[in-house]
Image (cartoon, rainbow, N blue to C red; front, side):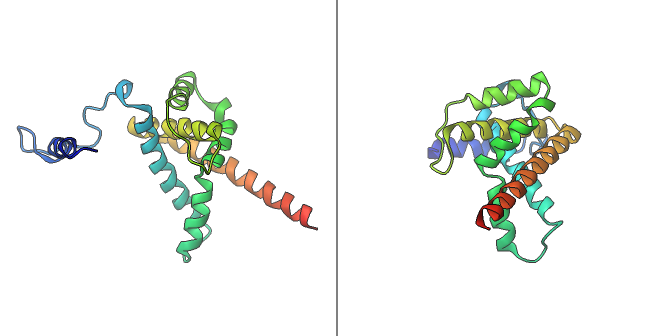
Length: 166
C-alpha cells in the first residue's frame, strides 16, 4: 500500500467526526459494495477464531498443538470440503455471495489447488458477509456445520490411513 493511501486511511479511521466521535462498528458498510476478497478476509478471521475456540474443548495447555491443528482445519483444502458439505443448507442469497467471491480473480497459494482455493475464498466470504450483517445465529449454524463436516472427514482419513497401515 502506498504511503499516501495509508495516511488517508488512517485519517479516515481514527480522526473524530464533527461530533468528536470515532466511527463505531460497521458504520457506513454497504454490503453490495464490499469487495468479495474483503468479505473473505473478515470470514477467514472469524473462522480462525471459531475453530480455535472450538478446539479449546479438547486442549487447553499446548499452544503448539492448538495452532498446528487449527491451521490444518482452516486450510483451503478443508474449507473447500466444508463448503461442499454445507452447500445444500444455503439460501440462494448465500450461494450468490459464495459464487461472487469464488469467481473473483485471486492467486492460489502453492499449498492448495486452484479449485480448492477459490471454493475456500467463497466459503470465507459467506462467513464474512454474515458477520458484517450481524446474522450471528446463522453464522454460528454454518460455522458449526462446517466444523462438524471437517472433523468427520478428518476422522475418516485417519481411520483409512490406520487401516492401510495394518
